[in-house]
Image 1 (cartoon, rainbow, N blue to C red):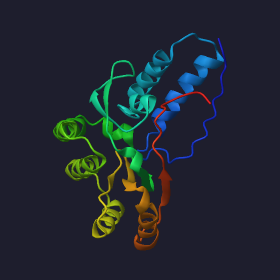
Image 2 (spheres, one colour):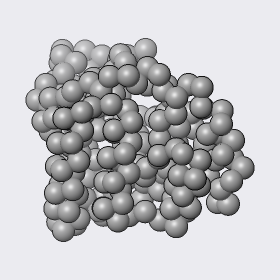
Image 3 (cartoon, rainbow, N blue to C red):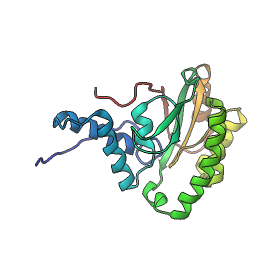
Image 4 (tube, rainbow, N blue to C red):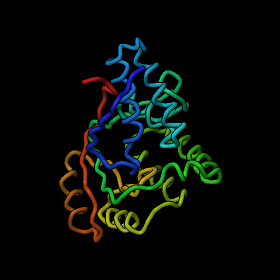
Length: 219
């Protein structure tokens, strides 16, 4: 038996649709497996993280996406080793930009059967379209449609999306969090930052990130 104290250092917003819960579970599973010499394979440890997130209702498919890395479509749901994903080409020409206003209660929403049913129905339709013609541009268009149809867009997110629309940038809302996110071509990153910093009335935390292609790993 062990008494273990865990300290997470998190550089992104928690509860805001950016995958911090899945990342916390996954990093902990991999770290404990190494530190305690449990002898699990990397996939086996990641499966435990997936199970923990499902049971805690902090997310559904985040762990698999973070485990594999890259920019992927979840073709078949499940834990790493079970889930099937499809890499979307062309993401190396983009950076990820997101503006966070605050968290939403993932557990509360995922505990609502009617919400889950609505999300699954809408998600299945847009997923089929994305699989037919995967690209970063198509992903953002369908992500925006999904967010609009799910109906969780807040006033602050709506204003921000409208501002970006006027400048020709299609962004969407992270699921689940009060976070506006999108993909900006490398040459457009500074312009998008200026738009968000100078034309949005509500204050938020702005982040710019690269896409990691290696997936989860010990460092």
